[in-house]
Amino acid sequence: MARRGRVAWRLAAGVAVAAVLGTTAPAVAVAAAVPRLTWAACAGGFECATAEVPVDHRDPRGAKLDLAVIRHPAGDPAHRIGSLFYNPGGPAVPGTAALPLMLDRFPEEVRQRFDIVSFDPRGTGGSAPVRCFDDPADEQALLAGTAAGFPEGAEQERAWTDAYRRLGEQCATRPLVAHLSTANTARDLDLLRRAVGDRDLTYLGTSYGSYLGATYANLFPGRVRAMVLDSGPDPVAWSTGSGQEAVAMGPLLRNRSDVAAGRVLNAFLDACGQAGPSGCAFSAGTAAATRARYDELLTRLRAHPVALGDGAFTEAATVEATIVSLYAPAPVPGLPGSGWAQLGTLLQTLWAAGDAPAAPLPPVVHPSPDQALAVVCSDSAGPSATADHAGTAALARARSGPVGPWFAWIDERCAGWPARDAARYDGPWNRRTARPVLVVANTGDPAMPYAGSQAMARALGRAELLTVDGFGHTVLANPSDCAARYEARYLVDGVLPPSGTVCAPNHRPFE
Image (cartoon, rainbow, N blue to C red; front, side):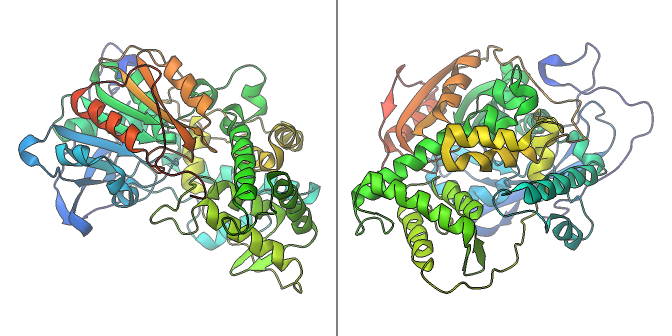
């Protein structure tokens, strides 16, 4: 893929003019040029290209950047409908990596009738990726004093707060960070729609990708052909919040993601206990005893962390591993260690290690948070730099159990973030789309609570909710043949499921 990830800072001569910014555009505006896509074969039957878009959509003749784009051609080109755009969420998950992993999860009829297209959103993956430090070692040195998972105790909390404040200041020196809002990605998406020759947009977004879809639907309501929003947040809670929460909490706590994770953790422990040791290695024989064992394990790890493989399992690191493992009750291809049975095995290994001699803990190596933070922190309202972050973490623990502090401190990383995108979109969320939107969600989602999808369906100007009575984060990653049939009918023919439809998942925990 030639030129992939290059930022083309080509400045046009003359006076800059405003670009079309969806339905909020000024009366006099000049639209950005439609990108030209030159497709070339890449791995596994996919085709790849780059698309040139403006850095600032208000200045379409100014600086440019290149988006990395990927597609899988329709299996039945004679009956091809058009392109289906897919965003995997994150934010900052590259579509060029996610689409090959998730392609088989799309209904067969959808794969036959659509080119399935994805892209790396601006500032991520191969699309001018944000790197706040020229040398990654400098970032590792800055974050060396922060804990894995979340900080424990006043000393770690001070180190965490200081490190992420300094990271935000460093990221704010990168010019692109001021242009990474979801709204600007939605404007890029509209240019890609035009580039593939589609009159209207067909779209499927999961997790944060649902928020991107809701943003597009309100910026370009007349261009929605069909839109599946899988497991999204409450758009008001995610973008700005309301009342005191707007300054005290970040988007995850405002969205009650901690509450959802706490409920699903309890459901996992209950199911693990009921499955017995033959079905779940961590089972203590009953639901109540297994819950008590998990609490005791965390107490042990608080005093005596366990070195396991290349990881150091403190209480906080174990909570983080637990939350991530709750995303999929059944194993997900391409996601090592996924599945509730695998989580039970990990927890039992840590439990048994409590009787072994202590091993030296390996150093913590932090994955770079630059790209995800650059999107979320410049887009959604974050907590105030002067907020009582330890108090917020305590509140989250009180309402959500041991998972609460993880969500509170993940939000804290955006506290006082110095760069916000002036072209972001904060609502309203009820603009009537040309065609209705389909919101789908699992009742037991540990990351984007079912209540958030309900709120999204209510907030959008024209939407229907399809419910899957099961666990896991996103319906696409936790398949339901029933939901897939309804989604296929909607995407192909525009037919919505009957109001109030509830589907069953393909897999139940510990089957």
